[in-house]
Image 1: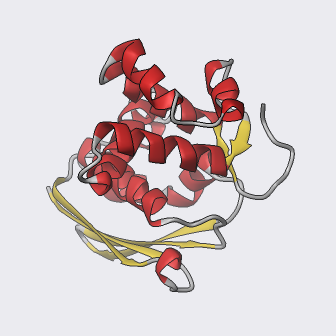
Image 2: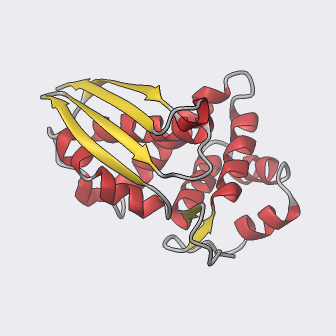
Image 3: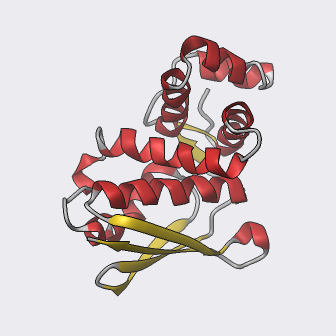
Length: 193
């Protein structure tokens, strides 16, 4: 059940990667455990056919992420959110978004952050700034429904994406966050080669 509203939407591919993560970490039992934590309307969407390129309410994804974090890591939900982001990067960058990976060149991937952002979100934008040979700053502006949990999934996504591009000892600092009252979100990325 995709929404027609331009506000606060996310691609179905994000929902699919979350459901695939659950299947990998416990099969149908784990998936059902998480789905039972959600309202019936959410379960109906998630148990149906999800179109990877379709748009879905971001709020649905946020509720799914919260249910996954509670099931997978109730004592350290932050770890679960980062893990979800890592799993999403792994699945998408080994699949339909493989064109963004150039081994030994994390800046290639990071320079495409504006396009990558549009593959996942309908509202807002992300900018890339190279700050050194092995560092960059990403800034997200104009996003709706910003939560620290969603930002942690972004940290995990870029952490794994940089690793897949050949970066080692990846560090991502979430230096500013709209959910903490800043005007935009910033992610300072650093790595070794």
